[in-house]
Image (cartoon, rainbow, N blue to C red; front, side):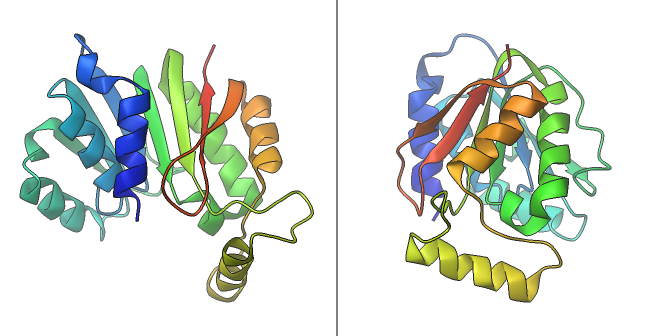
Amino acid sequence: MSYPSAQKLGDHLKLAKTKNEVRVLDLAAGSGIWGIALGQKSPRVRVTAVDWAGMIPTTKRITQKFGVADRFTYIEADLLEANFGSSYDIAILGHILHSEGEDRSRQLLAKTFRALKSGGTIAIAEWLVNDDRTKPLPSLMFAVQMLVNTEKGDTFSFNEIKKWLEEAGFKKVRKLEAPGPSPLILATKP
C-alpha cells in the first residue's frame, strides 16, 4: 500500500536529480518500504530505519531483497527513546501516528523536528478524517480498529496534524496527493 506513495514522494522531492547525499530518517520503518522506494530514486539516499528490535530483522531482510541494504543503518528502539541523531534531509512517518495517540504523536513530531536540518522535510502518511470526524468511511472504520487494538490510537484530521506540526516548529504544512487512503502531509523545518 505504501510503495506507490513513497515513489510519489521521491519524485516530488526530485531525488533522482540530487547531486548530494540525502539523509532519510524512516520512523517506525516496518518493512522499510518508504526508505527503499526513496533509495531506489537515487544511489545518494542514505536511510536510518528506526523500529522495535523485533521488527528490524524483517526490515533488514526486505532491504536486502530490494538491493539497498548497504545504504541503510538500523536503530532498534522505541521511537521516543531512540537517539535518532540529527541533520536529516527527510523524515518519514509512514502510518505510525494512528497507533501512538495524540500525546505520543505530538512528542514524536517535536523530536523529529529536532532531528531534521534546516530546510528538511517531514512526510506523514495517515488515514485522515475530516474535521467533523464524519468521513471518509475507511478512515473512520480504521479509527474503530485503533480503538479496539491500541491503548490510545485513533485517526486524525489534516488540521489536527497541521496544528501539531506548527506547534513543533514546522512551517509550510501542506498536502501532497499520492496513491493511498489519504494524501501525504508534508512540512518544512525553517
